[in-house]
Length: 425
Image (cartoon, rainbow, N blue to C red; front, side, top):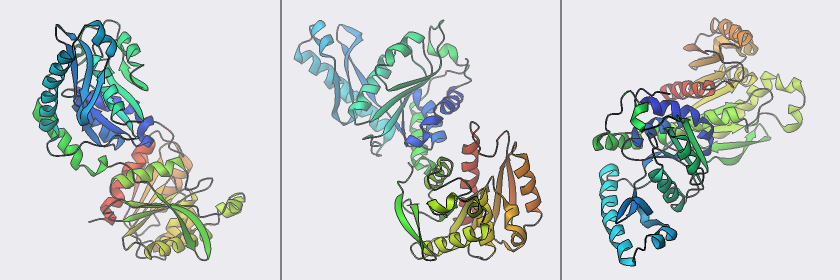
């Protein structure tokens, strides 16, 4: 596999790491060349990006042989076996450490400036480089990250020789490598453009990621009890610091507030600074009867009641995200609530809102999979009845549940952009 440049390698590596998105990871790039790759990974996963500054401690008379490594925060990893085998005296170890500590501090200040390190305690940490030759630095980085409190360490690189990948399996909990060519001589052979990454680029990418709201980790939701017309409904409320609006999720048939699809979309909205309320519009007993699932009027009434409950606790613009019959409920309720700021439908059944579609005033985005032909036709017809600002987005190759690679991410991005545009200044 040949990569165009480090940005291309980062985009491809991000696809292979999609399974980690819901683990709320931190992405760390090894300077210098690993940072442009890590930037793309962090951007795709909506994860915070930082630099992992590690200095290998080399045996004085054999610098290629490392007897340990040091990292920020006073982390020190030493191999006593190599120290003994190399017959290093305590003063030898101290001299090497002292010299490397000075360089470590210089690099950290240069790359990160005054920003604090991203805390790693209890987190899944993805260590990224642009490639691996021997793996010594990558192994040291994994050890340092673990010593800094990471609960799980994933090493991710575009290319490396097979034997290096095998060795690194003991340093990381998971190793993700896109290409392991046997005829491996140097990392640069596998890039069309492998020009040196200057310090200035590292500084710029780290600063840009720190300023990007999409790099914020997902907000931990709080369990709440929502009063919906005298009926208590369980919900999960997440309000990022400084949230500019809140989106209430109306679940469809066979779904709940625990739906991994809706939770993935909610996490993306949280990273964009939007609050979310996921709640069950039906009780467990009601969900067993399909008649309740398609009782759009009842679902809409409970959504309206839940929104009134929310307005009593958060003075913020409110939008609705509906899936399947939940989308019909959102549109039904929106016809009677002129204060709803925006509606997004994922694989929705707007036809079930019937003649009420013409009364909807909230800007409405309809998202349908390209292979969900029946629902796509229903949404096209519904557009002809809507009198509000509206748009139909078709996700190519996606079916009704958006299970295809990248499909749900596209849904989340479309919803994020729609709500951000219509609910926040």
